[in-house]
Length: 431
Image 1: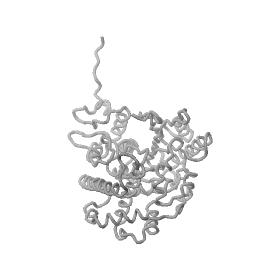
Image 2: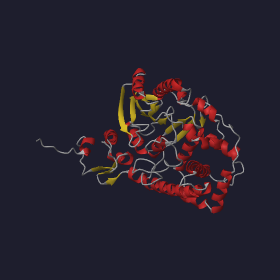
Image 3: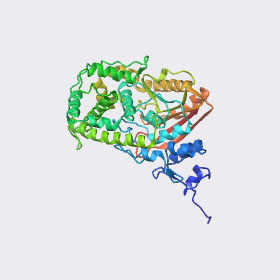
Image 4: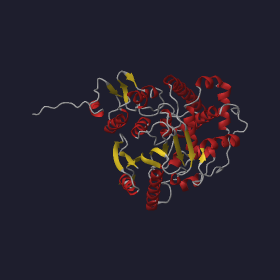
């Protein structure tokens, strides 16, 4: 019988520069893709461990020093799993199909984005990529076709910079109760906001328009913009909880959800303020636009890094999941459905249109990426009518067709999600 010895994972990740006595991964970084990402991020920063301590996603400790992600992920939110997701403001507002923030941070590190290098997410969703780029001090751009989600992302990003001590002083019972009544009594004309792919409206501009149009006499009118918005998001989170938990054992009144979420949000805002100031994090700038990824409003070769996940719309109806939010703002649901990738058409035509739009989207991403930059596209092996799709292979093929110098895939198993998704694929395309 042969003699076997265990491989020191740290020596493999660091290519024998360090051992497990010198550096330590987070205990919950166990999956193969996580170890691979830990190696990929380490190799870009191995010559500057002081910077790596501030940026790493998967290392808890380096040469006796706790890494910044240890403290950042200690600002816990609802549904948080270890150090992977839902920390900081990631958990604000429930949204299906969220990224794992820890994974996104590692991908940004792998892409070697530094200084003024721009990180783009053209399918922004609820803002995970830009929250991570901002916490790394990098400028971020996001594009999202759903106006309601663009608003949510803007508020979550702005919340990172809220001066918690000053904010908390203003939150008297009269103010918070009055805010709840004002949001609850809002009456908006149906289809008053009509999404369009031609115009890329800034989410901050839309929020200002909403306050002027929907809340012109609000008791919150004199509060700073970010403070008003976070109170509105707390109400919207309560509205989501109330909508989906009605009739279950977890059912509460809308007002009970609002006050419970208010306290939970305040804990996170307090923790985020403390950690950001204690570590001296300088948040990166960001811009959230409402529009389509089929025609990105950016110049050729202007972006260092793209990290995104196209919608799984041919398998998941995002509009139905957020219908309460869309109706609250009076967004024209039919107009949005007609423009969202994956929701166009029916039957086989739906899959065909999804493929055509996805290909056009990849072409646009590669147009705006700088030579040498990376686009990382996260996509699941979606099952349609019992048949699993192969868009992973198609994206690799399109990447080569559009002139990528390198294209490869890293597989991530979806634990417990075998009914709809067995794997997610991290598709790497380098221009």
